[in-house]
Image (cartoon, rainbow, N blue to C red; front, side, top):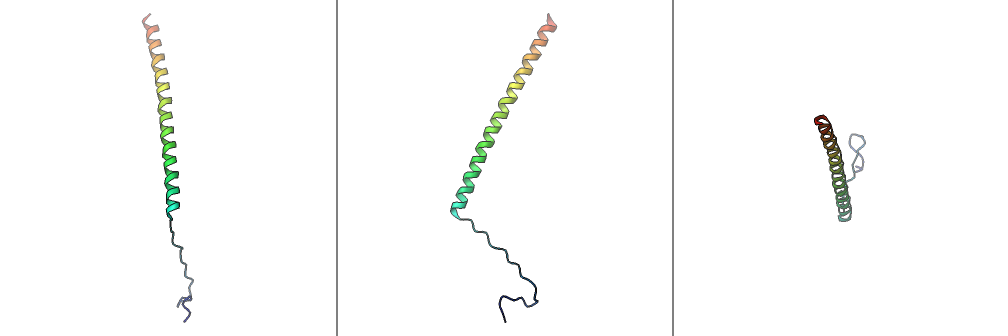
Length: 70
């Protein structure tokens, strides 16, 4: 009997195994590290922008309070 032929004459689908080499793992780790650095920078920038807006609002509120008290 032909070992490549299924006894039920149905197609056999075999999925290739995924082998990750050490180099591929190192590349993936470096990409992930770079993404974490970018995420950290973006988060830091967002906090800085939020502080600028917060300070502007506080300044405006103080100015309004001063005008109200005059």
